[in-house]
Amino acid sequence: MANPFFEALTGKSKNFPEEVCFDLHGIAGHEKRLTFSHVHDRISSTAQMYIENGVAKGDIVLIFAQHSEGMLLAFFGAQWMGAVPAFMPPPTIKQDVSAWAKGHKRLIDRIQPHLVVSEPSSLEHVKALGVDVIVSTDEIEVFQTPKRPTAVPVDLDNIAFLQHSSGTTGLKKGVTVTYRQLLSQLDVYGDAIGIDDTSNVISWLPIYHDMGLVAATLLPMRKGVPVRLIDTFAWLSNPGVLISLLEKHPNAYCWLPNFAFNYLAKRARLDLSENALSGVRAVINCSEPCKQDDMHAFETRFGPHGLPANAVQICYAAAEYVFAIAQTPRRAPITGLLVDAHILESERRVVVAHEATDRSKVIMPVGMPIEGVDIRIGDNLQDGNVGEVVIRGPSMCGGYFRNEETTKRKFVDGWYQTGDLGFKYEGVLYITGRVDDLIIVRGKNLYAHDIEQLASTIPGVKPGRTTAFGVDDASGTQQLILAVEATGEVAVRALKAEIIGRINDSFGIAPAHVVAVRANSLVKTTSGKISRSENRKNYLTRSMDLAELDFEGSRL
Image (cartoon, rainbow, N blue to C red; front, side, top):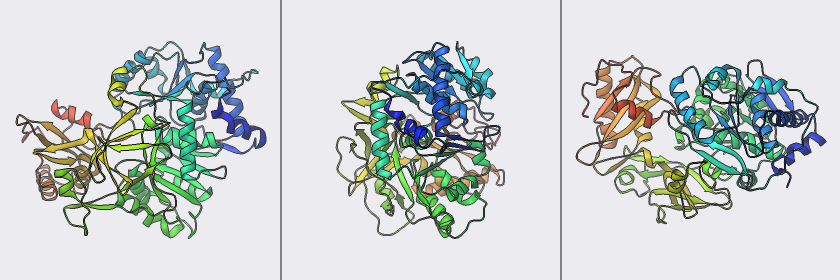
């Protein structure tokens, strides 16, 4: 059959040719408004460019690029002619380029792309990966041809794209997403959140991760909805631009990682009228763990300017299910569950607390399963018991591209084992953390993000720049290790003592070692999260950039 993914684009290009498809903001030299007719024509031209470079149906096209017209055309042009695109993060000035090159060279050796697209600033680095055919996004933008091939018919079980995991130096896993799985996800999730052809999508999200690609790019393309796309780095330096676009465009949807709610509340500097944000439909938190205080800060900051009550919602997602697995109900309030933290940590079960204390915690719901999704906890644990979240449904992917070992381990008997820990309570799903990030100290289950969140509030620690992990010891338990980026405002010895005392008071466990490191030295993944695994590796090899002279006090 013809490619059904492009039905809305084709229809819009004929019936509403001058309406906006993509509106690019904050992209130096590339700020432009792309109409549906323009995007339709340029996608077909890009498909012809690929054909002239020897790309055939089913070939892999890797794209190393940030936001630009050429980036978008590179992806959709590959799909138009039946190839399989995949976005990759280009290197940034804050990354170790040698580590980036090592990881991506291994990736290229595994998936063997026929052609690689790169933004101009990364061309030399990408060429060094040893690819045979490479074009730049600028070349795609200016390519001219009288030939306009029609979209290649696809079988719904053909691969639509590969979605790779975020990471640092490790080999990323490429999830194979078929058109059947993609269309099921986009149609069901679109209905769940009420998106329609009157909507607008506002996004600054990197497109090489599923939230930016699926929710903020492929979903609106499927529905014929315009996207107002902000350059990621421009948004970080001027977050208010997102709020301005939410004000300007009615019926707006926006997806954000958890940190962005507090970041916008504190850093968005702009004057707003009383009803400026009354047209917002949904601002969706899609980053576990979702934190009540951060969402509340956003609502407090923008509620007086017309942000509708209950516009802030939560989605639980995974690339292995294309994107959304569960979603909180539209226009319904989100109420966190106050639980006894001691029982949760020691017994992995939920007991509701009746009042907030030092040993209680709030866990936010991530909603009900979207249509077609089955969710179980562990081996069908009863409500209120914590276990691994396991899922299945029509959008569940078949596995990882050319990675049979990991596929067999994660996809078992028709179910995908997410690696997330959670529980159901009164039919609603809650996520407590990741299996890999659970630290077990003398039988007590500590969640790394809880330790990190507390450490971030201590004077002398750079907020959000902390990482907690476990290190096995000879007794068969784990030691709790915490690394924090120090601001320099507090002496290292005093800072460590304060951190150890606060954590011991709150969790009943003292860290075996607190490492104070220099600002901006903790390793991050390509999605911007602090990488616990890579920082743990650096800790064990004593290669952290210390804010102190040595590892004095280490109990390794």
